[in-house]
Length: 465
Length: 91
Image (cartoon, rainbow over all chains, first blue to last red; front, side):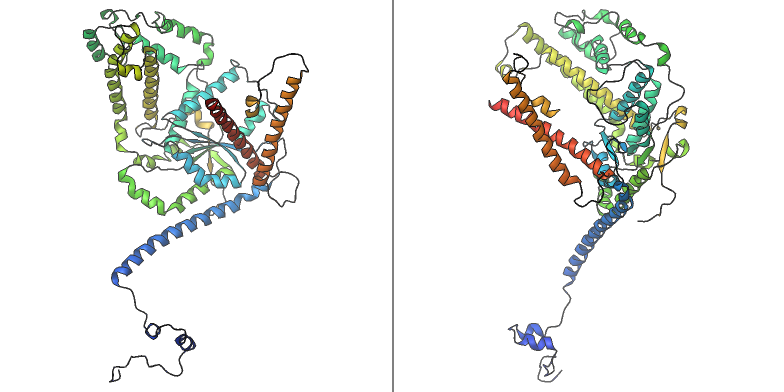
């Protein structure tokens, strides 16, 4: 340093071009001669953290795009193939059941739409998405389809004649061939369980058409809940009937055919015989489960875990920053489906394929049956009051109050309908949860052994993009 | 189908060629043609590549057109119902 305290940088005559030029632009000299300095420690921390997070996010999304584009490029040549006017494209059915305790029943299908669908669209494979809105929906749907197909084959039902004339080969063999070429996509472990249960039920139960609501209505009105009872007996009523079973001691209560039960709801003495007459129209031989099951279209199992709940928030955050793994998994599954290499179903390996997803079910679901029971008892406790109001108003025992004129309370018919609906919903929910819960193993039947196939990776897959 | 459901109310059967029925038929044909033209133009612009070498529809285009037409009909139907309820509520 010079003794007179001059600035360290002495302006020389041979300054670099920029500095010389900038001297004349009006920029203050002190700015030009400053040394670059690191920002303070706090700023450094802030900038470091923010740029790490943002950078990781951007890296992840860029990788997602790259992976997706790579897989799309692999398959898009398939879409160039011509399709004559009378041909059908390949069509797969996608099942997505409701994840336990999720309010949004669409999560599984959204996963499919986001991660697997782009590849399928690029390969020109048509898909049909079926959402299970409540627990057990997919199982009952699959079972009903199988039963209606059994009925068709047995000749009980005749095939529907549609007025629309469809082009192309509509014969049953061609339809069956198309269906076998298609495929079934199951997203998530609950869907898998429900599907297998539906298969088992479809091939094990009898073939007659059972109207669930009808059956339930019959069962419920044999119940004493809507009985014409006096106040003291009504307390006994609700205590003894907490589980909805038909009254064992009917003689204790006044007859349940009150003046106001509509005729079709009066308990008939021969409920058994009426249901027997329904099934007798179908020969018994068809009700026996068949010994062998025809081929089903191959199954693709898409692993999917839905994170719900406060304790799983770290998983959610990790997922947000690592979507490329989901993209990769979804794209690989779709690629498998498109390439269509199948192998027969191996019970030892495949039944356990999605078990680790079950660890993420909320633990509050263990008490699901009890919570439904609680709601049910609460409802039945409140029911006699509502019933009394309805009956009093209907018979004119008392005049309606001003509130009741403005907001008319439900009549008895409405109460019955409401009860039927609620019971149907509770029972199907509890039955559905029974299928999905971790304690229940995946349903399997020996007859499935030769009939099911799984999509696998084609033999020439590379493990990376 | 949407247009069949929304078509004009069947007039009195006053003879096979009454002017009412002819009018109704003409309206329905116009309606159907209009919907058809819209579908063709919209799905063509969305689904079919502008440059092509082959006259045959490829699989991708065919699947895309299937979906386009299905969605169009669905949207058309819902709009029709909505307009009907709005018209009924208003008038």
